Length: 152
Length: 101
Image 1 (cartoon, rainbow over the protein chains, first blue to last red):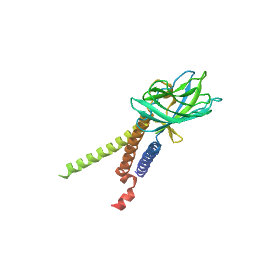
Image 2: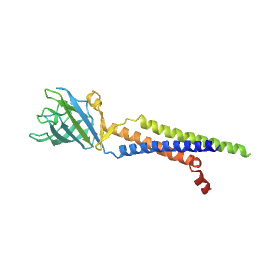
Image 3: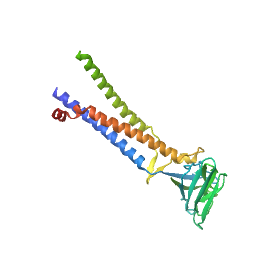
Image 4: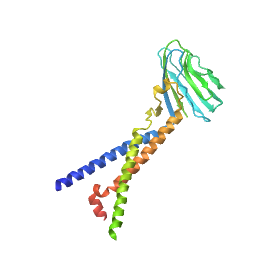
């Protein structure tokens, strides 16, 4: 009887420990997700002439769009602050990739309009896709890889 | 006259226990089957497969959905976990309960 009681107690404590560990791990993950700022990181790997999937930034507030190309020999970095007016246009202001770097600013809803270069050679960049979306376009002769970060 | 009242109380207690276990299971399921965006350098990493596809990517909606699922999962799991601790307090802390009584 005493052994049975001990086993039962051990079992209940073990179950309580399992529940506590599961609860804590869920809470840790939930806290991490909730406290992470509004920032999204995309990596791209595009064949020659290819476009990435269309990306929709948040509407009616400034979004920092910055991108880097990491392909050796063609590396670069560029950024723009972007505004999306839903169904109308994208508006942006920022700095092209080196070299030379220059201010880029305009607004458009027309597909193919250049927004910002991300590479050294100024052939890979972000361009307007629709009034609500933009794409990363690889205008180079070979495949290119890099990443784009959105902060809003 | 006392017996039905006691039965009612017991039935309510059993239902409460079941509800708490169901809450915990729901919280864990929400965690297991949530969108699960990876976090790296304090940023949500959008899976590369999404960017290579044709479908529009809405990062703000993805992040909002992830946050909502995690909050729901956290509330359900923590609430149920604490509730279960209280529900089984006599089993878990027999001496403390006796002292309290």
